[in-house]
Length: 163
Image 1 (cartoon, rainbow, N blue to C red):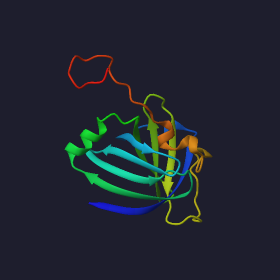
Image 2: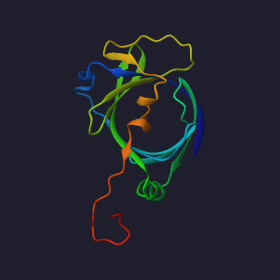
Image 3: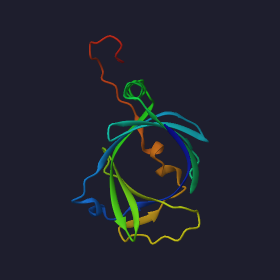
Image 4: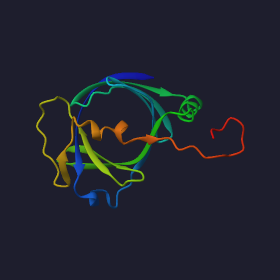
């Protein structure tokens, strides 16, 4: 039901967004339930499954993270509970030189980032021609930095809804 791991990941701006043309992306919705300078707690929904992640929030190449799959009822309740920051994106898998790259296109902005996971920090990597500048370690390009405050409807007339 849960697993802990070390994430070793490099991130790049996507210089050529055509890399995702004619590919099918998976929608990922995320709610950030807690963040501070060292830790973040994120709820994600991907392919109909809810996953709670506790992760090292410091922007760096190697970060620790812990995942727990949640039952639908709990995931939906937490997601709708008023998390301060939410995001949604389409994730595309793009193979290149024997590795799987993930290209995330963020809703509302069309902003795209590419990431690739490594098995060790010093591992050699051939960067695809559709990648631009590397942004690994830049806090401006963490998913939580790109999440936006939740927008609640002004008035719905149902009790318990936010106004």
